[in-house]
Amino acid sequence: MTSYTLLKARSQEVARIHSIGSILGWDQQVCLPPSGGAERAEQNAWLAGQAHRLWTDPQVGRWISDCESAPPQPADGFVPANVREWRRRHDRAVRVPESLVEALSRATSLAHEAWVEARRESRFPIFQPHLGRVVDLLRQTADRVGYTAHPYDALLDEYEPGWTTAEVVELFDRFAPGATVLVRQAGDIPPPGPLPAGPYPIGAQQQFNHRVAESIGFDFFRGRIDTAQHPFCTELGPDDIRLTTRYDESDFTSSLYGILHEAGHGLYEQGLSKADHGTPAGQAASLGIHESQSRLWENHIGRTRAFWEHWFEEAVRHFPQLADTDPAGITRHVNRIARSLIRVEADEVTYDLHIVVRFDLERRLVEGSLAVADLPEAWNAEYEKRLGLHVPDDSHGCLQDIHWSGGAIGYFPTYTLGNLCAAQLIGAAHRELAGLDSSLAAGDYTPLREWLRSRIHGRGHSLAPVDLIREATGSPPGPEDHLTHLADKVRLARES
Image (cartoon, rainbow, N blue to C red; front, side):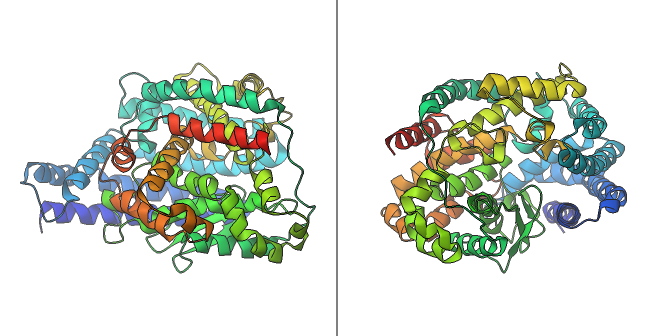
């Protein structure tokens, strides 16, 4: 067997371990009994240690070196990209001791259970010691991995390979002033009238959500939808993609847009090369690219007038009270601009300011300029400053998101990066696909889905995220298209 074949087999073996870990993670969020958290933490830690041990085996480094010195393999265009990414991942992993990997996995599993309780009770002190432990372990990880300018660089690289903290700061500095102006312009726009009163039964929501997800191409022979406290998508294998959402019987659109968002992630996973599963070529390029897919389907498709013109009659069949409104009324409702404390319920115009807040707080936590104990106060001050909102309690403040309990510091910037890329991608799709507006109006999402599969999904991690977007759209990620999209939202809200 060649070094490349051995390396590919090892990569796929590690991927299977991570898939098993994902099964445990899905189970923990969906159906783990309250007393099962401690043992689940040990299971997760053991699996993380096994995967780390296999990937940091000195033989892996020798196989990579053999591949790097071998002549090009023209028959497999993914070989150079796989080797390049394996080198990056191996070099990063060998700097971190197995004991630290296991400790972080254990700490995040326990932190999740503490976060669930703290969020339910709206009491940050329940979560505080766990978050302190996670932040300390992530600082140790950053020190071990190494960085040039800021410890956050080492954590960001886990989610957005190739980006630095300084580059994200520069991009956000180009975007945030324009977004802030738009938020202020929208401040005097009266909100549209509410949807007809509920209840919108959960069973009817589940049926409608299933139909919509299926129509955009989510394959239910390779996936399913369940209920969780925080919506998410997880890949348990190339033919096992799980989506979750949560339900509000007073507003069916909450679960619907949760599913459109997560189904966007699911389409990406189902569009990756099955033959290359477990290698970089069969994996997403980054979380920012992943978010571009979810935000594209959720916002650029699901919040349009054309979407509701097509889906209105079926929505009325599931929710008869909607007969008292019309597609224009639902479109106004789902595009309402109103400052909100809750990120996942935020409108498009104000959404990215939520990300700016979290990005700032994360950097301060990692560099040590913000103590974990002071996080609620700092969070509340930032919401007053950025959005002019008073935070009434911790559940509506720093406990609302699941990410920090899972150690996902470095993740939040990917949401805004995803928004920027989504706007560029939908613009490029309209330029390249004649008749796209007509097919979307008819509820035919195949042309757009297949365009995304050829430009994004099928490419896996064969290119750096920035290069992937440059190749698909003609330019690297930038704020211009997204700001134009948001300005259109403000204009339409004012006109309606």
